[in-house]
Image 1 (cartoon, rainbow, N blue to C red):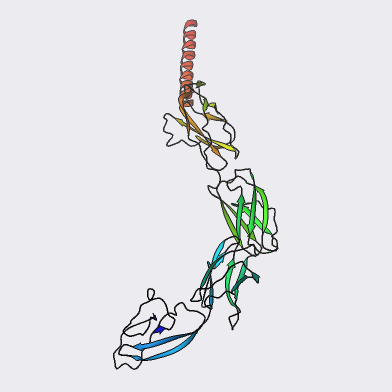
Image 2 (image 1 turned 135 degrees about the horizontal axis):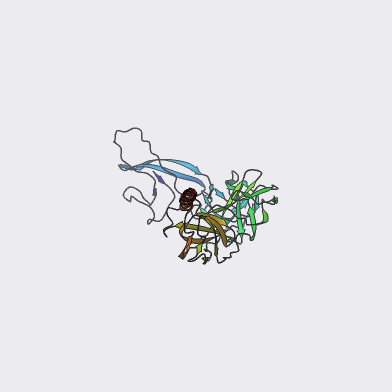
Length: 379
């Protein structure tokens, strides 16, 4: 089958010994001479609006083709079919009048600034930036005075989007959240991770809102802002918090010290203070006997310390310790290790108890010996 729309010989396949001129080949094949019925499927090629022709030619009798006509109707498509305000979409049209200068495209009934000139085959492509508009289904329409059957339309689903200024805030900083493409005249619930930070702003007629809040502290490693309107439209924004680790705290004391002689003793650990706009906490680890810190005895790690000091009661032994700083965004400094061991006590509670028992036994022996000698003296 061939369409009667002429094209350049460079762009189509032609069979000059069969066809008197160059046609667009849409399908070809072979069939036995005694076949009485042939079924052929093909895709309508790019063609201008109006009547087009198809011919079925037999190579052995090209002078006697079978033909029929069909009407090409215009179509409109939008890519992508879902977008947010401020994004750019592509509008494609096909099957329109060739080289038309009267085509106009409207968006929700408002004429756009698209300048449309169709090709020789009635096609066109244009780009359009979605204006501020509420969430839901919206319509593009092509109005052409040369079309006799009416307007050509295509649908676009508009969804919400949010943006943040500044884009990389610190914990405790004030930020401005802007939303577009939500439901009109709707209150908005805003969450930072699982923390409600909303002042319940209300969108305007086009689904826009602006709100300010303070970035709170959160225990999660990644942070997401979520805005939801009453219609259930949701937009999220991944918060790129600062990723610079805080300074390393310097150990101050203890260092090569001894605490007490007998039993467990309280030990005060101190280190240099570290500052960060997002806030700082410290983690302290203490290990007995070696510097590997693994495995760590129960109770030898203190986390979430808000001050550069900590008191721990330790049993007798030789100890090493280290400390690190963590800011409000979850960034951690390197461990700061104190290379100088310290000692607690000289005798453990067990040794002290054994010594006391031995002392009592010796004391009783001495007393009994004393009274024995006194009795012998008076005899």
